[in-house]
Length: 470
Image (cartoon, rainbow, N blue to C red; front, side):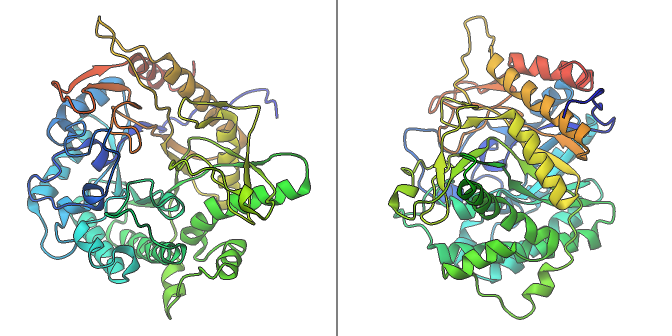
């Protein structure tokens, strides 16, 4: 549709950026923090670990001041469960509580809205040793943890995110590292874990509404539109299969209180449906999220299954690259989109399509909590970092947000990945995402100096002009 006039970004639009605790904080065993699964899993030895990361734990005041200089209106970060409840439950670690209180107040001092993710992949290791998300006791532990956060920060935080990319954890269980010995859970176990996370999330949302009457809470999922490879109706069915199984079967539960009908039939047919106990449906019903948080990086193009092993592509170990599933869908190439050097599809128009589909389905305001491009940024001899590719990527996606707003999609804000360089889960510091360069190599920490990239100054101007002159 070609409009005669595009709508502007809303006046209260949350221009922001994102990080996650384990990828940016460091201080992995300081001030009472216990190990998380991230700390204990096996990761590629050729890349940086997460013990120091970007040292945001010790440098958050400097970093948040830089975010304010950039003009950010929101900072989406995660709280490490292991800093608040080192044993997963029970005694509260006051040092951890005070650290995040100080972070939240630093944001407020600079006029930045804190957007808090309560769980970003980093389950306490002590709970994992007791079965992790396979164990229904972890549901109670998560709700106890959330209650501490709501009690401590409920007066100072408006926007809460429950669980980051739950669909990634279930569909790509090795993406955040491998358990010792490399054995991953079975698919039956994964969907049982998923069900337990859904119950924990629903209870957390209800608790938030009780304890934080001014608060707003929502799930944070990795969503993407699917294209059929051709006009063949079979390709269209396959694309819908995977869109449901990858996206809507995870988003329907918090919004509607139960699984997508096609998604549930798939689970039953494959013998991997979770055990549902008496009372579970009642727990899932009525969670009433206030908004939908969405991480978007790329789209996928899907062809009809051939029903044999050729449906499955070589395993890439990357959650943004489609693998295929025998009897469900087969990944296909799309000649109309670009790709990053890491094989991720670049599709800004698909962003608009995804926004339209998600809003049409749920009629909830949408907050973008991740979107960005990873690249091996180069620090020049004169101390500059020229990342025009990042500027182009973000500009193209912001243009599509404006079109989506004109389409009628209600947008809360845009928090791309990442506010500053973080440890990439797959490629360490070889793959950078930030507006701010962190001067360190994989194993040489140097001085961890912060250096604004060209994209920093570009985004500063975009925010100052309220996105009117992209």
